[in-house]
Image 1 (cartoon, rainbow over the protein chains, first blue to last red):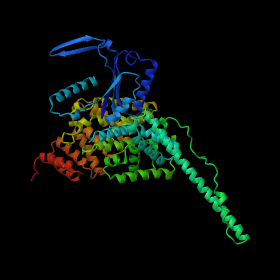
Image 2: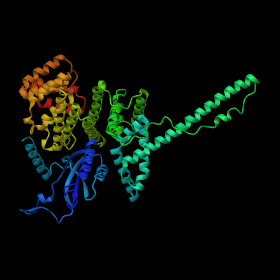
Image 3: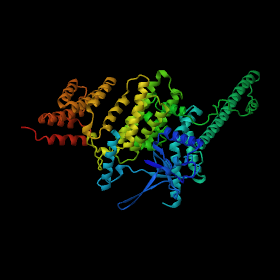
Image 4: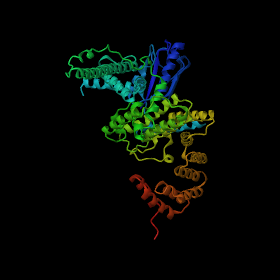
Length: 138
Length: 458
């Protein structure tokens, strides 16, 4: 079972606001634990929202707003994808993230095989994945 | 289910989750501590039982691994104390008997009467001391211990089934019941297998160590073979109704990734990981919703998992770099991973680089001469350069006779004949293949193909 651990923070703390050496080392050690346990599939940290943009959708309209997104307390700061035997194991790994503050959301990743293949959106997903395949070898 | 029962179940699952994460390192530490796999595993089990009793009430401790290790080590020390006390008492009794015998002899020699009081003084024991206790200063479980545990679980004194069972038990943290379920044998049988394996290790006095240079390669081969065997048990599961079998594939892949970190310079470790990652990427595409298998070339490649493909290709690169660094030829797993990578890189079945695949099969055949590899090479060459050249190779295999009885030989030959327009011969070959097929599904498929070629001529 694949789970995504989404690291959220309000950007006022060290997690997203240029982590200090020690915090960085602790997180590095944690990532190493995930690698050594053979459970991590992917994991990335994100630049602060001051460098990002947010799009909002309203019918055919698209509004693009520059960061930072100061009004939100729960901003995505990074994520891990882990492959584990159970939801409880994912939670146990999440508990071990060396965070002094902030919050982490644990969500199960859908596998394409979980879906009804005749579903219209699944068909679109397949097209998208084929396009991803194209860019992979380009 | 009542709320209380639900909460208890949730607490138990939380403990089991910690167990899955911690058990291998815990057992590895305890083997070093006690020098015995069986005792280490029992101590670890005791610690798990203690956790199942205490954590639902007290909550999971901040450092659950250290908690489990401490509990298990305390149990070990208690056992040694009891054993030391027992040994001391046994020694005292032996001394008592010796003194009594000597006194009796002396008394008999002197007067012929039995000495009743002589023994009582010998019963006053010396203060309890534990002298043969192993080093108590063993600290955090280290990677080296985990590596030793993997090598001991896959030790050649054990039979193949015992290696697989012990690896899943010690490294995967699976229960005997779970392993039994995965291999479709009774739980009691699997428990027996594990108990016997642990006894065999103890009886052979197998040391808890990473093998010396001279035997390292052969021992690593054994480890990789066990991991790949576990993987294939899960991957080739066609029934799919039992959740434990796919779990085997996941566990094997996880073990492979663990090994890749423990032995980062071993090309074949990365080769095996690459092979398993790429094969796993196709899991969602290789069966219909009814569970019927879909052949590789007919799979919807949009359903291949791109993350696993990327991981597989990265592992393959590591394997190639490691092999190059030591000036070694690519190993079996690396070559098989290269073939899997050829398929993974092809956006459509038509885009497959068959010439390269045929070339890799040729290299694989030089390393491990095998008629099955030759047959695969023939298929790849037929795809690259036409069915006629493939047929020449297949006919050579038929003449050699080494694959007599293997249904894929006439099946491949039939396919090539059909492509060459030799329908009557193709139909006969499909029928021959059907007669040799091991299972109903294959037989039905082959007979369908035979029928599709039209009725038998007069």
